[in-house]
Length: 167
Image (tube, rainbow, N blue to C red; front, side, top):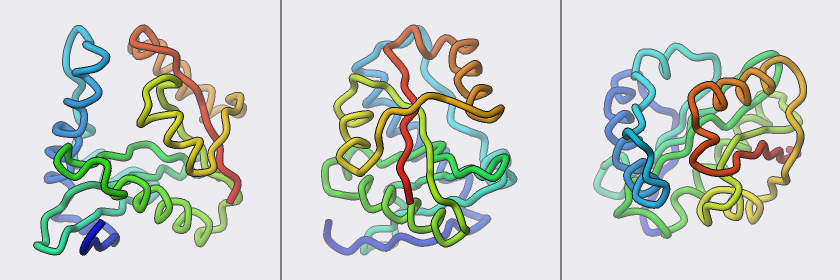
Protein backbone atom coordinates (compact mmCIF):
# COMPACT_ATOMS: atom_id res chain seq x y z
CA UNK A 1 0.00 0.00 0.00
CA UNK A 2 3.00 2.29 0.39
CA UNK A 3 2.64 5.76 1.83
CA UNK A 4 -1.11 6.19 2.18
CA UNK A 5 -2.87 8.61 4.48
CA UNK A 6 -6.57 8.34 5.29
CA UNK A 7 -8.05 11.58 6.59
CA UNK A 8 -11.20 13.66 6.60
CA UNK A 9 -11.98 15.37 3.31
CA UNK A 10 -11.56 19.13 3.31
CA UNK A 11 -14.35 21.30 1.91
CA UNK A 12 -12.18 22.38 -1.02
CA UNK A 13 -11.61 18.74 -2.08
CA UNK A 14 -15.17 17.64 -2.79
CA UNK A 15 -15.07 18.75 -6.44
CA UNK A 16 -11.96 16.61 -6.99
CA UNK A 17 -13.80 13.61 -5.59
CA UNK A 18 -16.17 13.78 -8.56
CA UNK A 19 -13.16 13.05 -10.80
CA UNK A 20 -12.08 10.12 -8.60
CA UNK A 21 -15.61 8.68 -8.68
CA UNK A 22 -15.89 9.13 -12.45
CA UNK A 23 -12.55 7.36 -13.04
CA UNK A 24 -13.38 4.54 -10.63
CA UNK A 25 -16.77 4.00 -12.27
CA UNK A 26 -15.13 3.28 -15.63
CA UNK A 27 -13.93 -0.09 -14.31
CA UNK A 28 -17.42 -1.14 -13.26
CA UNK A 29 -18.97 0.24 -16.43
CA UNK A 30 -16.53 -1.75 -18.59
CA UNK A 31 -17.83 -4.91 -16.90
CA UNK A 32 -21.56 -4.11 -16.69
CA UNK A 33 -21.93 -2.01 -19.85
CA UNK A 34 -24.78 0.29 -18.78
CA UNK A 35 -26.75 2.14 -21.44
CA UNK A 36 -25.23 5.41 -20.25
CA UNK A 37 -22.33 6.22 -17.93
CA UNK A 38 -23.07 6.94 -14.30
CA UNK A 39 -22.93 10.47 -13.00
CA UNK A 40 -20.80 11.23 -9.93
CA UNK A 41 -22.47 12.69 -6.89
CA UNK A 42 -22.22 16.48 -7.21
CA UNK A 43 -19.63 17.98 -4.87
CA UNK A 44 -22.15 20.24 -3.14
CA UNK A 45 -24.49 17.32 -2.48
CA UNK A 46 -21.73 15.16 -1.00
CA UNK A 47 -20.39 18.03 1.12
CA UNK A 48 -23.81 18.89 2.53
CA UNK A 49 -25.04 15.34 3.17
CA UNK A 50 -25.25 14.24 6.80
CA UNK A 51 -22.31 12.00 7.56
CA UNK A 52 -18.62 12.13 6.69
CA UNK A 53 -16.19 11.68 3.83
CA UNK A 54 -12.66 10.34 4.17
CA UNK A 55 -9.99 10.54 1.50
CA UNK A 56 -6.96 8.41 0.71
CA UNK A 57 -3.91 10.47 -0.19
CA UNK A 58 -0.74 8.93 -1.56
CA UNK A 59 2.79 9.93 -0.56
CA UNK A 60 2.79 12.64 -3.24
CA UNK A 61 -0.33 14.33 -1.86
CA UNK A 62 -2.56 12.99 -4.67
CA UNK A 63 -6.13 12.00 -3.78
CA UNK A 64 -6.40 8.39 -4.93
CA UNK A 65 -9.68 7.38 -3.33
CA UNK A 66 -12.45 8.24 -0.92
CA UNK A 67 -15.28 6.79 1.12
CA UNK A 68 -18.55 8.56 1.86
CA UNK A 69 -20.65 7.52 4.86
CA UNK A 70 -24.20 8.81 5.19
CA UNK A 71 -25.80 9.15 8.58
CA UNK A 72 -29.55 8.92 8.20
CA UNK A 73 -32.26 8.09 10.74
CA UNK A 74 -29.62 7.11 13.30
CA UNK A 75 -27.94 4.67 10.91
CA UNK A 76 -24.56 4.66 9.19
CA UNK A 77 -24.57 3.76 5.50
CA UNK A 78 -21.45 3.33 3.38
CA UNK A 79 -22.72 5.24 0.36
CA UNK A 80 -19.66 5.27 -1.89
CA UNK A 81 -16.14 3.86 -2.05
CA UNK A 82 -14.10 4.99 -5.05
CA UNK A 83 -10.43 4.32 -5.83
CA UNK A 84 -8.57 5.47 -8.92
CA UNK A 85 -8.06 2.50 -11.26
CA UNK A 86 -4.26 2.86 -11.16
CA UNK A 87 -4.43 2.43 -7.36
CA UNK A 88 -6.75 -0.58 -7.40
CA UNK A 89 -5.76 -3.88 -5.81
CA UNK A 90 -3.27 -2.19 -3.48
CA UNK A 91 -5.34 -2.17 -0.29
CA UNK A 92 -6.61 1.39 -0.69
CA UNK A 93 -10.28 0.39 -0.81
CA UNK A 94 -9.90 -1.89 2.21
CA UNK A 95 -8.13 0.86 4.17
CA UNK A 96 -10.96 3.27 3.33
CA UNK A 97 -13.64 0.77 4.36
CA UNK A 98 -11.88 0.06 7.66
CA UNK A 99 -11.49 3.79 8.35
CA UNK A 100 -15.19 4.33 7.54
CA UNK A 101 -16.18 1.56 9.95
CA UNK A 102 -13.95 3.01 12.66
CA UNK A 103 -15.40 6.48 12.07
CA UNK A 104 -18.97 5.19 12.28
CA UNK A 105 -18.16 3.32 15.50
CA UNK A 106 -16.58 6.46 16.98
CA UNK A 107 -19.81 8.33 16.18
CA UNK A 108 -21.78 5.80 18.19
CA UNK A 109 -23.09 3.51 15.45
CA UNK A 110 -23.33 -0.19 16.17
CA UNK A 111 -23.56 -1.27 12.52
CA UNK A 112 -22.97 0.07 9.04
CA UNK A 113 -24.84 -0.90 5.87
CA UNK A 114 -24.13 -0.65 2.16
CA UNK A 115 -25.73 -1.63 -1.14
CA UNK A 116 -23.73 -3.29 -3.86
CA UNK A 117 -23.69 -5.70 -6.77
CA UNK A 118 -23.84 -9.27 -5.50
CA UNK A 119 -21.72 -10.86 -8.21
CA UNK A 120 -19.03 -8.29 -9.06
CA UNK A 121 -15.76 -9.55 -7.50
CA UNK A 122 -14.73 -6.18 -6.06
CA UNK A 123 -18.23 -5.57 -4.69
CA UNK A 124 -20.09 -8.11 -2.49
CA UNK A 125 -17.26 -10.69 -2.35
CA UNK A 126 -14.83 -7.93 -1.31
CA UNK A 127 -17.20 -6.58 1.34
CA UNK A 128 -17.83 -10.10 2.63
CA UNK A 129 -14.07 -10.43 3.17
CA UNK A 130 -14.23 -7.16 5.15
CA UNK A 131 -16.82 -8.53 7.59
CA UNK A 132 -20.08 -7.55 5.87
CA UNK A 133 -22.95 -10.03 5.43
CA UNK A 134 -26.05 -9.85 3.27
CA UNK A 135 -29.05 -8.45 5.14
CA UNK A 136 -32.63 -7.52 4.39
CA UNK A 137 -33.47 -3.83 4.14
CA UNK A 138 -35.60 -2.61 7.03
CA UNK A 139 -36.59 0.84 8.12
CA UNK A 140 -37.52 3.78 5.95
CA UNK A 141 -34.00 4.84 4.88
CA UNK A 142 -32.93 1.35 3.80
CA UNK A 143 -36.17 0.64 1.96
CA UNK A 144 -35.94 4.03 0.22
CA UNK A 145 -32.41 3.25 -1.02
CA UNK A 146 -33.58 -0.06 -2.43
CA UNK A 147 -36.55 1.62 -4.14
CA UNK A 148 -34.31 4.37 -5.56
CA UNK A 149 -32.05 1.74 -7.12
CA UNK A 150 -35.01 0.01 -8.74
CA UNK A 151 -36.43 3.32 -9.99
CA UNK A 152 -33.08 4.27 -11.54
CA UNK A 153 -32.74 0.87 -13.24
CA UNK A 154 -29.54 -0.03 -11.40
CA UNK A 155 -30.89 -3.50 -10.64
CA UNK A 156 -31.10 -4.23 -14.38
CA UNK A 157 -27.28 -4.33 -14.47
CA UNK A 158 -27.05 -7.15 -11.93
CA UNK A 159 -28.40 -8.43 -8.64
CA UNK A 160 -28.16 -5.81 -5.90
CA UNK A 161 -27.90 -6.63 -2.20
CA UNK A 162 -27.74 -4.83 1.08
CA UNK A 163 -24.89 -5.82 3.37
CA UNK A 164 -24.34 -4.99 7.03
CA UNK A 165 -21.31 -5.09 9.29
CA UNK A 166 -21.64 -5.03 13.02
CA UNK A 167 -19.30 -2.52 14.60
